[in-house]
Length: 215
Image 1 (cartoon, helix red, strand yellow):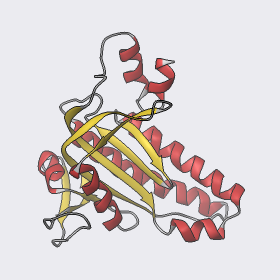
Image 2 (cartoon, helix red, strand yellow):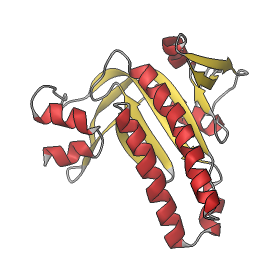
Image 3 (cartoon, helix red, strand yellow):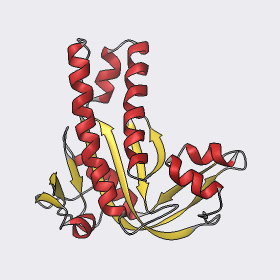
């Protein structure tokens, strides 16, 4: 039962270490520094109106399979699917010294995977998709939340909201990074600072960065 619940959100190698007792997950709530990633499809509502239900389900299953594999490859935590969006974490429930760069590498690889996915669909005459990605690093509250019948591990706080807002700012094919994330990875990436933006629900404006490439 433990392995099954963990395997839905953690990479297989981390699950093996937890089950073996090499790593432990805190049961209660805790403050953790995490990097949060949101990735979602642009024009998703109109896409659902154009595709037959079976085609839509097939597209989403393949899309989620590819994104989840990339998150696990870079030792992230798959938090949840929200409609067409994927929410992933680095730093919770388990963290490492390279969480930020792992998250950025995953985001970059997701865009590469979407390009490959689109090329495959184009050959078959199928509709293509565009994905925007947002990343934010901050101290958040992490823990198991829910009802007495179902609990899930998640995080919440300003950093989570910022990642979601930056994702909404990202155009198809873009990865938009919060300043704190960029500062942690600046030696490993090439990025372009964007104009200052005021994001919904955020008191202070933000000058994020658009990821150009990994160094």
